Length: 314
Image (cartoon, rainbow, N blue to C red; front, side, top):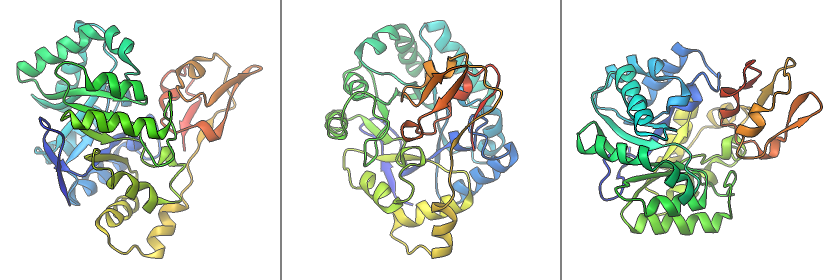
């Protein structure tokens, strides 16, 4: 598999990062052990880094496989605001993943300059942890153009993980062209860029060559995280990226695998998920929540805040 360097300061990694949200409890597509088998297969095919986050609640799921592949690089993310919260999140990751050093640690879902300013104490703690050798590189993830721009100017930042796909689905504050301009600006400053939501949460999966080719052909994007929950998806995506011919059987097994957000009948309309959804895909009507499917990017974050476990990606 092609190797890339994430900016001036980042590591050399495979052009595909395994997005572990797809095998996590948040999405519930596979069992814990099935997820481990899929991850093992991904590593056997040359993927050598993994993207996770504290809210995915899957550190313990990943740990046995990561122990089998000790050279695999790990990216994780958290929402810490204070120094104490950042240190707790880092220690949780180090303990549950059984790693002394976390290769890349990101502040999760930073929207703009003011969001980063509100997390200034956590950011300084990240820089301290990097200086101490507890973290390799630091950065942010974002669904926002202003997040990319602010991150590019953040002192000490190495990596940005932006939402980007060929239709601009999920960008919360502007157009695709504006996001590309922001990414190019950050990349020119030497910041490592790896893309998220390449398939727009599944909405663009019917045109995989276009979705993957779009990202691959942007010079300012160095790599991409792909959420995959079957061996067929891994084979399919890696074949396209390497220019190999894909059999119709394999293509059909992947493209026609539909996913959706399921809202259980016992929803009590508390509205927590509506507030958590950055895409505006959930609305409260009467005494329960309803989905605007065209806006949903299938991230599964809404399920995290539901007190009654009503929401799941299926």
